Amino acid sequence: MTQIIEQFIQQYQREYDYYSQAAKICSNQAESKLESSGIRAIVTFRAKRPDRLEDKLTKRNKENGYKTVEGIYTDIVDLAGVRIALYFPGDILEVDKIIHANFNVKEAKEFPEQNKVKEGKTFIGYKAKHYRVKLREDKLGGSEKRFSNALVEIQVASVLMHGWAEVEHDLVYKPLSGGLSEDELAILDELNGLVLTGEIALERLQRAFKRRVENEDREFNNHFELAAYIYDVIKIDNPSINLESSIGKVDTLYRFTRAIKFNKPDKIKKYISKLVFSEEQRPIADQIIDAILIENPKYYDAFEKVKLQIISKKHYKTHFEELFSEESYQNLLGKFISKWISVETKLKNQLKVKAEDYRDVRLLPFTGRLLNRYQLLGENEITQFEYLRRFRNNLVHGIEVPDEASFLAAIEMIDEINNKLTPPIKRSVNRKRK
Image (cartoon, rainbow, N blue to C red):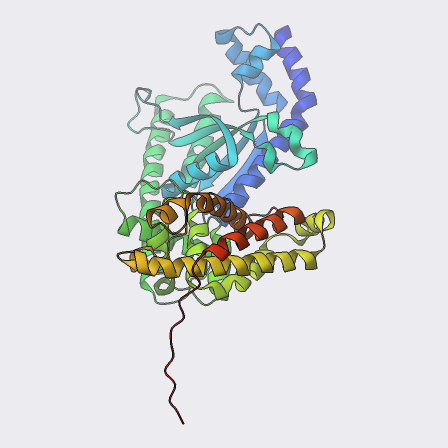
């Protein structure tokens, strides 16, 4: 072992716990997002063991000729690693959105690489996607922010492919009893073909699962079924669209629809069809929740209860103690939401008059473009409304608690807009005289 490698290993042994903890945090964040998005997967993590790393560096040194310790760090980019083993390979596109939305992606690589299929193989070999990421500082607690500098490799593949790759890697690249024979290599190639066939079967299983969920007139059993149904409606109704929004917190949507008894395909389909392709690129689950709330403002209370059940009480308690009491927060939240509902109600009444086909736009969120298209507000008011809409979305879908001054300023601003809007049209009621 060269002196450079020895220096690196000594330094890495001191840093091993750092890389292990960085991988653990990355794994926990990824697993939480996959779970809430309704994606079935097994997520594991590890930091490279110093003894195995030493063997790898000794072999690579023959090709690379390491000159400095920093050169080794540049070469070995997977000191901290996370594996996402998907039950259904078809979910890899959604996982790609989740990774880009929640981590700072430095590099993404797809396998097999073009023009790099090994000679003598019938099948393509390892099929996966690797990401080199850093943890986002805004998603780390105070004591965890030091891990934002660690580079973590996330490997995404099917459960079958991960299993085959582990076997092949240990037998081919870490042989304990010499190189493999041609027969052994041919068997590994054959197993690769079986794995690829298995992935096709998994995709068929996923489609069969979605058909069962959609065709049965019953409630969704869990948020995995709800997520599968949402994907299916999108694909069937809009086969050519390039969907950029991630699916978001389907577990929250599931709890909410169950609380208001909307937890069935026939109840939720119209909201999916109308909102997932709006002008916004917000998470689909958030857009569906908003569509329900726009049409049924009475369900705001039910949603707030669901949200408080999901978010940890400890997190909220910390914010309340720093800002104001929970009672004061609920009072300010109630005032803002009631005024927001009043504004939306007035805008809906104006939209009924101005829109050519009100049915096509009645569930859309009131974005600046929509307000401008139908001239529902003036330019200055639209700017104010866009700020208030972001404030409202953070209240409804976020976990940050605004301070009291921000609340009061938002309430004052929404009062100004409310006063400029035409009041809701009151329908006359004919009463029989006695």
